[in-house]
Length: 191
Image (cartoon, rainbow, N blue to C red):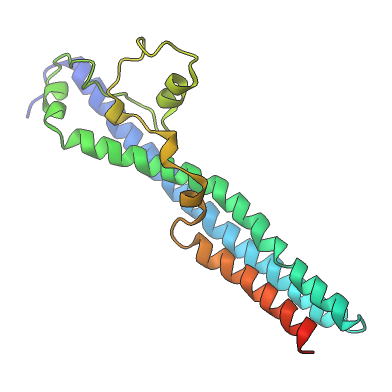
């Protein structure tokens, strides 16, 4: 399909640029989450090694307490991971919104340069959904932001349980916490 309208061409360019930025953002966030997990495992394993090898003369009860305290390390990294996953989920949601828009019949009208009705208009260049948050915060009159609600990111979709247990986070960090608690319990009751 040929695009004769320069405004439509600019809009399409902005949309494609936004998709590139979203892909780069997702890639960077995945890398940060991967490095966070590696550092969490290193800090957790290093503390276990320190308590096992360097504090041999400590009473077993205190050692059990120290092993139990190592469960705090993965919990702290889980909180850090949580913050990055919120950004990852918001970026992924925006990518799905763009995909839905591109595959809708409205996209063809938009590409031809036709003015869309307010209930069908699409926000451009909003990688993490700032337009929604501005609108939801009440800092701007909702009547002045004329975008279809279906194309805005709803913050209520990112509850803390959904983010904390997204993909493998709970398995990785939960396993480290559980292993610390099992080791602590074993030292306290068995040894």
